[in-house]
Image (cartoon, rainbow, N blue to C red; front, side, top):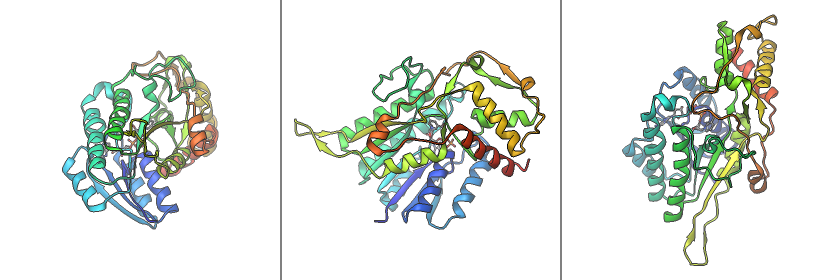
Length: 343
Ligand SMILES: NC(=O)c1ccc[n+]([C@@H]2O[C@H](COP(=O)([O-])OP(=O)(O)OC[C@H]3O[C@@H](n4cnc5c(N)ncnc54)[C@H](O)[C@@H]3O)[C@@H](O)[C@H]2O)c1
């Protein structure tokens, strides 16, 4: 049956990839909202929207903020969404140290508005982006959704953990099926320029030096965007069941999953693979002197030394595990970069 789906953050990296996948593989009506803010180069968001518009399919784009309650009221009244996927947020750990206000506006007020709309409309499933950053400096690896995560080390992480708490309360009070997805370092073509693989590339091209934090002793569970999109799509179609407990009251139809590669890579290995793929794609010349453009520096506030996803719950409930290797994913990124920036 044709569904009507709201994707917030539709011009964002993950949102645009999800919309493209839904338009290519379903008959569903997709409404996308995004405020097209200038946290990073807006032309990338416009490029992603153009790519979406080049596809056949039922897509409506609304430029606006999820912090605008009256705009959301009118959208939910007009479209009666079956599924809501909330990906709009102010992302970035470091930016939350210098620009906290926007995190409260988009990640807290915006998310609260989405929950209120789900409360007052018959939404079958709310899926929303959480983040691996909720694990803070968790010592135990791999990170499991059963771990206690009450020690965020950035405001960004605190907003994401708060989203999970808000969603739990709304699931319990109003029986709204909700699933939070903790994404682990998502990367790929037309990704976010604030993330290391992208900003390193920009710097290397200009002949600048890249800073490798914690003297290279960092590990990240890099997850290719197509794997994230596959995971979101599977989760969207299977809302947590509504059930009553022994007391006759509803058990909150609430779930949280990790989506990560379950295979953390050392930052120095990651830089090595990235440099090889940039040379292979012709973004950088084969005689590029990488060693003289690398600087090993101390850890930054808000950063964590390792992220490592335990994905067993996702595998158990959806039979799915991300599988794209870092080399394949960075190859796709390097090839896209070459074309997009006409290097
Ligand atoms: N990319 C990652 O590695 C990663 C990791 C963990 C979690 N996440 C989360 O996944 C989601 C998507 O991330 P992304 O990497 O695609 O980031 P992104 O910045 O590319 O996408 C977010 C989009 O939301 C829009 N937006 C921001 N505030 C808004 C508001 N108030 N109203 C409407 N639109 C707004 C932005 O313009 C942007 O296009 C975010 O919630 C992010 O926190 C991403």
